[in-house]
Image 1 (tube, helix red, strand yellow):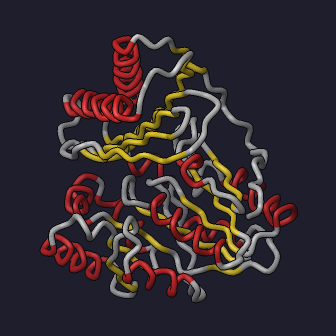
Image 2 (image 1 turned 90 degrees about the horizontal axis):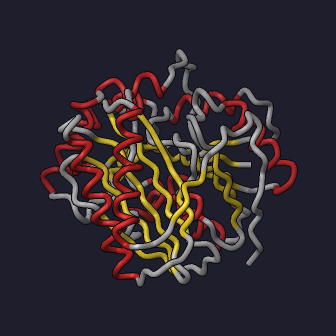
Length: 352
């Protein structure tokens, strides 16, 4: 069983990259599983990553490099016994330390285990701001990587990409640096797949760190069940965009330079509408995912720097409920229970 760890700060494009990588591996006949780690109580990216022939499992309410180590071990052991994947791709939460995750897996006693090079993705359009906001945190993620992927080069100015590369070389001169667009799946992204096929290198064990404490990130997630769905896709897109803009502006009143990730998804009968915003200055991004859904629901996951959790909770819930009332749609907030330490494996996808 080969383990691929693809990390990076909130909003660096991990989910898009993993979605493309997993599909190519599955198409090549590799039994592939994905473990998605969300710091909030509710998973959101797992829905996006689901695909025929691929098992997807979410671990929520913490970080697998520190607070969810037991859940990760149980999940990997169960995958090994019941699904027997050729490859397991791990998407850590955006505040995790990828190198520390590898160290924890190495001592779990799993049989026939190997690792691809540890990857940290970077969004060049935000890297300067991130380094200023949480320097110890970003520095650790970059230094632990064997491959540094400068993502989103299709939308970042060339001079910003060059400046980001220079900064990464200074922080981690031993890492291989690749520049690509995971969204476009360009030639440079294909180079990442080639390098992931190589074995990772052994590194000395480091002192353990608590990523949640170091990052100063507060997180909150919420799920609303919609009694009925009156949205057409364009109305849904507008709802997502306006909700994210309102949340962004209210968070800015507390931390004008916040970074992090606010993700919002709305299930419609024939699609999932997803949106995100990753900093105080970013315009919300929205995408459509064709998919049949039996339930209509609204999910939000937020993880923001230097905003108290109680204030973040009030901002996101008040904003969403105000926006929902304006639409005239009845809704019910679903209370979340803390998950057990041992997470049950579920949802084996049908084979192609």
